Length: 502
Image (cartoon, rainbow, N blue to C red):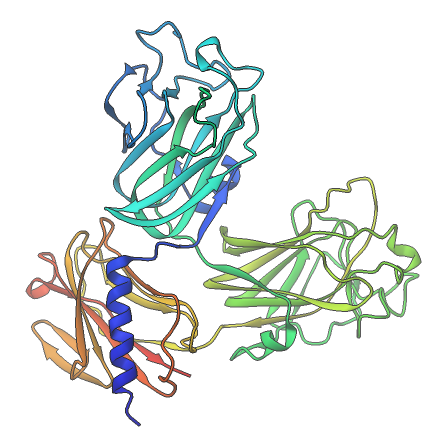
């Protein structure tokens, strides 16, 4: 079967997406500095701000601050002004002030995470700060001149030090922070503190409450198997998962063995089930997975006598790769008095899940119950064929995301390549092992080539918003060649990657 017409259309879309980038890149937003730093791995990019007073632009740490188009004035610290010793006392150390808050921040190298301490005065507005307004701020991310994505922050707390942050799947090197409040004739001020950046890309994490669809995922399995009747335990290994009490949790019982609840905690959840005092369940996988799900029951009218007062609860599912947080999803409006399913899928592998009841009802004791646990490695659409040729940053790594089903999203991602360097992507419908200089080309003969450039940290992301139809059954091979003085023969090569379209 040939796919030349559809593949040509796909290649055109691929080239277009590479040139235009993904303007609507998925961004994760934060208003808590500790959570932002824990999840993104961000570090302090500026350190304590200096007391420079009014400037046109200034470099502090790895960042350069300037006035974005439409902004008015820029002062880092209050030196030489009537506001000395500082613009806003409650924000520790020197801070940044503007007339019209249009701030531009340029990074020394591209990053994936960006955040800053922030204060919006109301009752605490200093005399030079104008009339208080509850403002809306827009944070826009750019890779060179290309817009990567943007996020808006509204309902920002007043009169306290707060935090605004974003995490992107796509690298960016410039940020603009703009007050977009519809109050053009009211002069008010907000203030910036220290800034933070991170170099780890964000994962895409989505909720899945359709058990049938989850189990249709290739490789999906009953990871725990039928639950045994163990009673209270500290932890227990069931199948390919190990259950334990998460931080802040209380008790763990797998089945009601040796309790008055026998023969089961919740008769409406088939088989034995899991109960806790404070619901904070930790599940560790034997090997990383891309999908996790669990049978779940929230009683209301069916609450057993030992289950306390029914509350419609909110659950948060947090995914970790070892100790690194990959992402989180929140489940609300969970159906009551029936067996339901809570699941999550990620494009980044994880090997630990913590499920926490985060309902704001600390003085009400209610119970929910867990059933069997399921995991899946995700659709196996991508195969690493090897043949990397080492460069200055190690082996360039080519990977793919997305199930390659018609209309689905996904991307080709290169990392660990030479930064800011031309790269050639070879694409073929067949595979070989053709010697070339000091390396090996696998996509042969090439159907097409695409010339692109790595970003300042040696990466390229080529996303698509809808995989082309008409490619079912096709097999495509991809590989990058990157000029690199540190590589053998002056050319580094990524691994070859095969895409098997279902």
